[in-house]
Image (tube, rainbow, N blue to C red; front, top):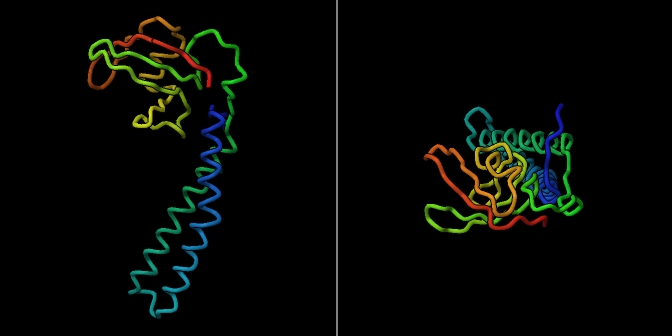
Amino acid sequence: MDKQPITVSGLKKIKLELDERKNIIRPKIVQAIAEARSHGDLKENAEYHAAKEEQGLNEKRVQELETTIATANVIDITKIKKDDKVIFGATIIVKDLETEKENKYKIVGKDEADVKSGLIFFQSPMGKGFIGKSKGEFAEIKTPSGEKNFEIIDVQYI
């Protein structure tokens, strides 16, 4: 399996979710299944079937998280030479040249990406458009909604 880059904070978040799923959610589901079984006939027991389905979804997510951890290539941005270039793990402040609005983004791996929170997947169009650029440079990014132009205001390694 290929190693997948992930930030230190991203790995921590994934480990917390895994711990919660194994030690809090899993026992609750097992308890719900046991309670539903005590109600008798399992063929027409909706509570039982719902709990079993929830168990399957939880176990699938546990496997996904364990695979992510096993294939993680943790990149600690604070230990990398700082040269104002946008790299994996960097936090950037950019100005949209069309709207003049400034946004803050962090370039991250696929398992921690969340655009609404400002976490951009490094292989997304925006991630690819910013990586390799330096503070003060311009990035022209093709998005599904059209072409966007940004100026990189600051690059931080935090």
